[in-house]
Image (cartoon, rainbow, N blue to C red):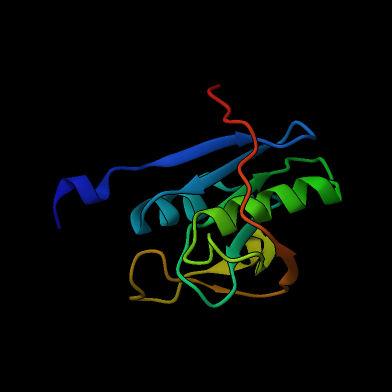
Length: 129
């Protein structure tokens, strides 16, 4: 594996509620985002049943509103194989409920306590902070 594949590439967006939305751009970046950047109470998103980016809504102590959740789900759809579909099912859970099986390949996870939301591909404004 070349060092280029191990570069951490994470896109940053700003939800309408002022929360940061992060999206991994490779399997390695997805692992880094999910297991090194995300905090316990952050929300983690992924399109159900299709390859795509791990997306994290950084919540801190804030309870995100429905619009923040919809926007993060839209980012997950945008960075997935379902990008061109009219909508897709997105699973989400707290980052504390995302686990990696021993020996699993980069980007592969299991989740618990998930919820689902239907979303269309959408990117909120980029956050360059």
